[in-house]
Length: 165
Image 1 (cartoon, rainbow, N blue to C red):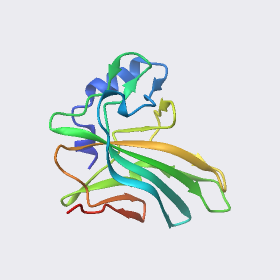
Image 2 (tube, rainbow, N blue to C red):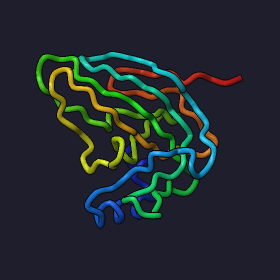
Image 3 (tube, rainbow, N blue to C red):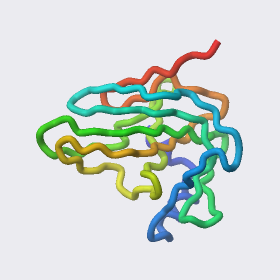
Image 4 (tube, rainbow, N blue to C red):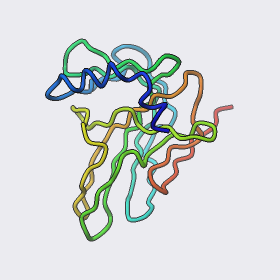
C-alpha cells in the first residue's frame, strides 16, 4: 500500500531533499498527549529475524532537521509510531527492508512513511545487518484518523493489536 503511505507527503519529500540530515524529535509528548496502542516489550521471531516492539503509539508530528518544521500527515491521517528493535539472528550478513513492516488497513497494508533511529530519519528503506546485529528503529505510519490497525507485521512476525472494550 505504498500509494497511501506516500500520498500527500510531497512536503516531507521536499524537506528531506533539502536537508543534509533529518532529526526526529525525541520527545513525543511535547506537543500533546500520547496514547499507547501497544505498550511494553512484545518480542516476535520469524525467518531468522527477531523484533522487539517496545510500543506503538498515536504520536505527534515529528520535527525534521532540528528546526521548527514538522512532517504533517496527509489529510485525514495521523501518525502511528512503532518503536522497535530489529536483530539479524542468521550467521550471515543480510539486508532488512523496512517496507516489509506494515499496518493492516481493511484488505490493504500501510508501509512506514518515515523510518528513523534515535536522531535521524533515514533516506534508505533497507539496511544491512551483520550476524547478531540489533538496531533500534522508529517506524512512522500515516494511518486514517479514528482507525486502529488489527496488527503490525514485520515480515512474517505479527504483532496483534489488543482490542479495547
